[in-house]
Image 1 (cartoon, rainbow, N blue to C red):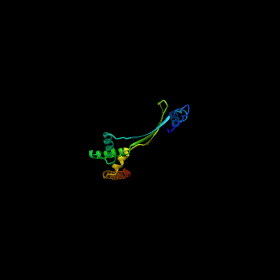
Image 2: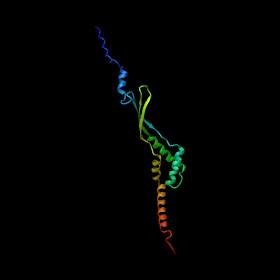
Image 3: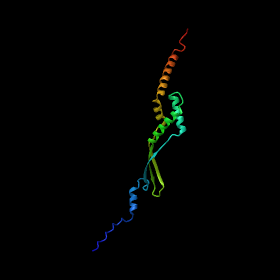
Image 4: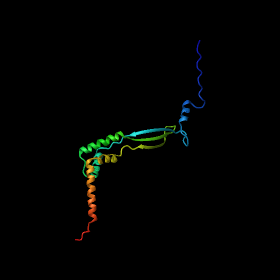
Length: 157
């Protein structure tokens, strides 16, 4: 005895299964055919070698009172590059496309910016003994200069 063939499920008239699925994905409002696509992008920003040397030397001049040695540039440069690699920037965006495939709208937000190289390197360099000595010395010199300026012109011998 043969088993009867299953009865096919009728598809609704007027729209194919694809058209019905597409209808469930479409947006609303002024463009009912816009299909949203959300993207989350991670981007790595690495500071170039010339920028590293320039930034580190500038910070050393202001925080330590001298230029950085090549070894210090290499050391702090490697630390910054490692931090940049470990903390990439991220962007989240939504793009809507028309049913024809043309892009309709794009909107998004930068969710993280990565590493602030100035702040990162400043924190590292300020923690060194050389920076602490320079800060103490310049504060002492500024205090003596201020006292000296206060009494300038006061002696009429």
